[in-house]
Image (cartoon, rainbow, N blue to C red):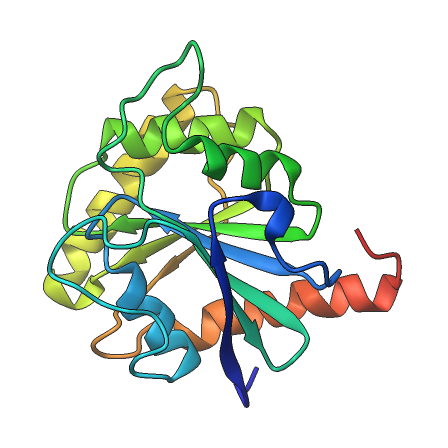
Length: 206
């Protein structure tokens, strides 16, 4: 997929105020400081589309970007500083829960994970929430340029082991990326393009 246009549309904390267009949406979320803004800028080939910051947790709202006039890239706040509660599943702000559970246009979520670290409980917990809620998602491992290929494979294997231990039948689709080197860009965009084609081909909406 070639990104021809990418424009900011709206920021808000109320799902009912999200764009009314019935276009497929792809939401990006992860722990704070996982490199989400840099990844979004790399994918869209726009240096300043998403604001980057050395301060974790900068994204505080639901941000919609219209891509090629036919799908939305949605930048969501990180969940790194929120308290994890299995009882309420409030692993992040309530309006993010509302987005995932009420937004019919959501085609797929991308859960970002820093490949440099061992499997983190909060990431496993969040993905368990996604699975239990039957929300389609993929994993994007970020910052792959920071460690060796051997460590990358080792950390992915550790995540697989953790997820199988949490009763997953299989590992969700995943991509290994580097915003610095552009690694994984084509794979992620091609995946989005394939899902879009399926949605538009069926012409059945959501």
